[in-house]
Amino acid sequence: MSYAVKEMFLTLQGEGVNAGRRAVFVRFAGCNLWSGREQDRASAICQFCDTDFVGVDGLGGAKFATADALAEAALGFWGEGDTSLFVVLTGGEPMLQVDDALVDALHARDFEIAIESNGTLPVHPGIDWVCISPKAGSEVVQRSGDELKLVWPQAGTDLDEIERWDFDHFLLQPMDNLQAVANHAAAIALVMDRPHWRLTIQTHKLLGLR
Ligand SMILES: C[S@@+](CC[C@H](N)C(=O)[O-])C[C@H]1O[C@@H](n2cnc3c(N)ncnc32)[C@H](O)[C@@H]1O
Ligand SMILES: Nc1nc2[nH]cc(C(=O)O)c2c(=O)[nH]1
Ligand code: SF4
Ligand SMILES: [Mg+2]
Image (cartoon, rainbow, N blue to C red; front, side, top):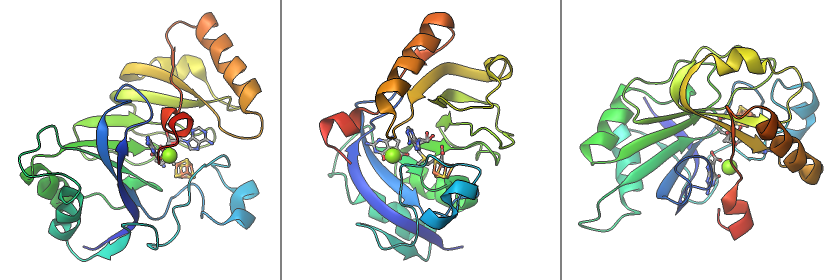
């Protein structure tokens, strides 16, 4: 199978428990909760997306014909003898495209594989670090993993239910939009009220990283 990748870039993981870690990001094109077109945003299930995932025209983006070709491109961001190779599969929704061949090709090159997924599709069992970010109004089937990262506030979220899911870390990420200041305050207030949760912020945006 081939893979549609919007962009591929080296940066620091900006979010969550692995924040600060050197990582190559593979941003897959396409999502099942929004078309990516602005005219569809208001009617989408997920309306607050901060990302352009349409097409394969970004820096490092391409239609990769094979898993090996994609994995080689990711490896190209690292130097000979480098250790701690880390790749973050994101999108768009990566689980629309991630398959056995890709997981095997990345592991064969010694990558530790993380994923950022909306949880509406089962995550590939070979992935080493699973981050699920539920979206109100969607059915989350992937209810276990390493970190649950809830963008806040999201009307219609059942916090009691989510707290019963099987994750090692429960993180609240303030929504980045025109109400960012109020969203920070709401997230802080929620953590104060429900210490099951921890605040995470999008550090790459503060630092001017991609
Ligand atoms: C662009 S999504 C791609 C991966 C996957 N589709 C998902 O939603 O988890 C990457 C991460 O950014 C988060 N995100 C998207 N838009 C955001 C926003 N406006 N503010 C804060 N986080 C946002 C998502 O919830 C997710 O954790
Ligand atoms: N630096 C950086 N960290 C990130 N963590 C999750 C991201 C994403 O868009 O999935 C992201 C991103 O786009 N950039
Ligand atoms: S599910 Fe993820 S990629 Fe899809 S629109 Fe929402 S935040 Fe963006
Ligand atoms: Mg992002």
